[in-house]
Length: 229
Image (tube, rainbow, N blue to C red; front, side, top):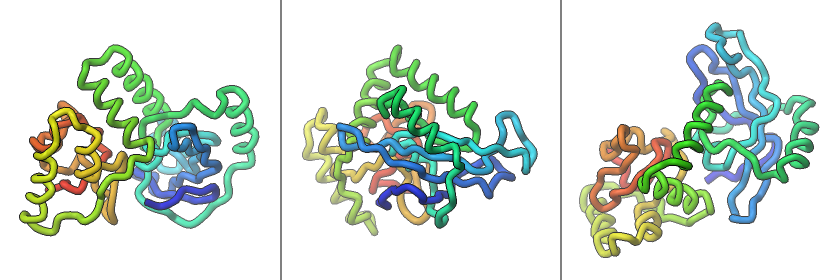
């Protein structure tokens, strides 16, 4: 996993026609649970409501959880200068929130969409079912820096079945070790930035992994080494 650092410029998945937009890291803020918040600027982002390439705006300050940041980006692209306004907005954010407030959903190019997704997620967790609460707990485990076995990735069915055999030895409520053995990450993985969303076992209408040995709620942008197409 690439270490995140101020000054890095990252490619993400913007709407069509805005491929030159980039995310620039301004600060990485460590938290007590060993996770990080990543404070960024977004250069040449689509203006809210804008559909025409060239109708862009710089988002001067955007704080995200590390898992949300990693779910947003697909690769590094050198280094670019931050807007001069970033430092003042960062200092104000630290003063007003104690460096705790941040988006927990991926950024896909439009700030208004991100705000809507964030509020929808918070409402879902506040009033949600046991499945949604379990999803939130799994997400917290992964965001805390849980070291999982992402390697070796199974090269054939025999190796795949070997991992399934390990999982079958666990108790049904042992979520912690299920995540470790399966190699879960809370962000896309690999050169192609593979995600649960492309896996044959992912049920998008339930946000669920249907592989019997996993059988857990998962976010669409997560990954594990049992990923298969």
